[in-house]
Image (cartoon, rainbow, N blue to C red):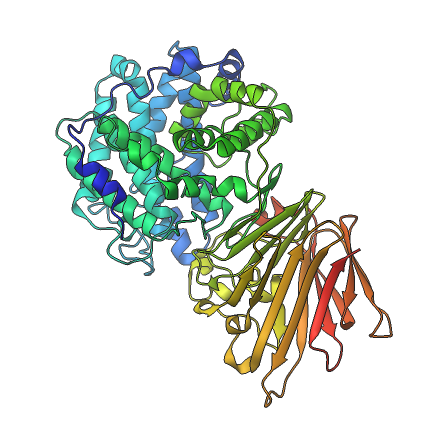
Length: 628
């Protein structure tokens, strides 16, 4: 295991808090941002911050529903951020009383962890109520700590002018709920030996540092905090291949690779430059550039695991991470995506301000980290200037991420991806060998994504959920079986062409032994819009009784299929007006319409989805799709 961050810390001299983190903030706010943020904050004058009763906390354990608690919890924090930004922009004290109410409402919550995370050991049942004497620090306890530390930091003079008890209360709660548990307890996400980590590690570590760096409390042992934080970053990095692929998917990059920016930036500031070498490390750069390599067009991204295909526009953090690792391609992607989102009024939680017509629903969506929004204020001008001076997008190329088995090849407005690897990814779906196809920059063969999280999502019953099953990916059902989860279920014999236009792999081992497969090879190639091929060939063991193959393909646009009565004649498989395939080797098909009823899926898919199921001809061992 490489000790990149611990080695950097060992070379550091003085360790200290930060006293000038947001000094450039007020002078950076554009007039459009000022107008928008004040207007947004005005909606919450006199706002009544909802309490969180014990029964609401218990609701998750009793019903498995996460949404009812989280709606109240997150909305309080979003409203408080809006009021803080309004006060920073107006600077007249009009929002201060409501800000104080928000601070005290959060400080008076019995716990800051989500009910779904209310356990002390990884993957163990959650306690129905929190132990207030033993705080749990997880994703959103850490986010809450960072939020309150930032508010105290940027508004200390205003809050002290009312009463110095306000910042004292914040400091007391942060010490009790964040700093002491961090130093005295071991939570699984901190890392230990070979235990696998995920986005939690770097996301929590980032917010621990945001909390400690802004408290400016001489009693806090910063050396111990930085030592533990540097160790956690190394544990996080150990589970990434040198190619930097995020096996949790593009959505989780925002909580994983992207958190490398603030984490590294704060460590560097708190040690007077000891982490400059980490910023130039090749693996860190590859982790940073992952997001631009899986970007398709506009808001569309390749999505595996629990990732959705539509993500919010890139913003300040992507740009600043690209700047930190010296990546013109990432800076170009981020700046131009940011600029494009402003021009189309697709304003999101990345904090785009240029259009005061933007809806607060987009602007506030899923954003409780105040620091992210402050970074947008500070760097909006720079990002837009960069986009103006570098108007040509640096195009993403073909790539094969061997560490996770993700293959991507492009031609014009067509992008083809194949997932090799195994069924043991973080936020895993059983999708080894699945393909994703974009045509005309729109989803043709799709990965559905994941429904709203419930208790079932992260339980032993996870793979009862249809979106997790290989039969609802672009994969075969073999002898009545779909794929199984775990590292033992994987692709083999993976071969990628030197020009990264084709891939071949055997997915036999992703299926249970009961299938009695000798091999199941999938070949996919994209050379031009007329030379896109997806070809499957298979062979069963001699004693196999059931040799049925069903080829499943998921689409969003309505499919049309015409098969000839003569199996030797090609059929047609058309996906809306996006692409048309010649079908070879199928004699029968079914089209199943799947209503989209889940709120999370409805954010992406506005109408029903379709599963097309092809049945290969009798005694056939080959099926092929070729674009016309």
